[in-house]
Image (cartoon, rainbow, N blue to C red; front, side, top):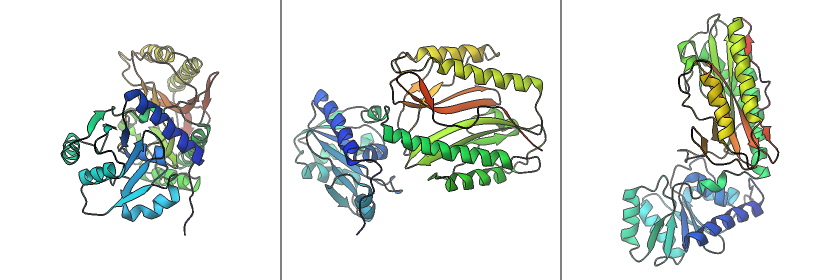
Length: 376
């Protein structure tokens, strides 16, 4: 019989459920339905690579949550789940019927039921649930009622992001070593993917990458293109340990770079560091955001429209809304938040994964901050 192999101490899951129950009391709901895969995993520990199949965390006002998942995932529930209460559904049951059965099991068919209005809970599915449980009062708590609680990471969560960062460094170094004139992007991607896996990443990546004209555009994917001397190439390597992600960008030139390119890269790297010097617990996000925007627009960009910080950590797809720092953001950093922060001018892109600390920030991706010229 398999034993539990929790990603975190059980007390951490108990604390997470307790924070959700605090929100439930504030919103005066008797039970909460956590429906997004990341919410289920965050609250209960239960994880399966089949997480896109329907699962549900039913959180009462007091006590432990009840988990509903597919019967074929029972092994993974026993291995990863932090709590004992579980019911299984089998192929052929409809999601609305599953939720109705969960509410009956929780004694909540006439309760005030708060729900996370996130995928896969569509309006059509909610209407079908209401038809099956007509005496309950359903309250929309928003799509980020649980996601907001995930923004501030525990020390154990940050350790997983650090581990993912180490895998990203290994993948990036392998990609740089493979990037040569005459080598295809596909070969570079294969080197990155192998290194990521061997360094502990649970996904192969490699993440967005592109050369030639695609180097100027975010979210390129590797193609059959063969690298040429003088090419610019961008690597955004993604690593993941227990579904916690880290990433960073590096821009490299194949064989040679001009003095102007070296100078631009240096300005962008220093610009980031000036902005990050303003990051700390309680610091307004608007100040580093303005430093980055003003600096990039000084390079001749008419209007810099990208976010400057985007939350990173536990990620199950489709991703939920996360904290972004954009033009006009007026909130403050909190210690324990983790972000992917980047700058981009044309084909020149640099980024890191960082964590907010009481006094400043910690860089969780440790590759040298440099503009790379790969040998031919």
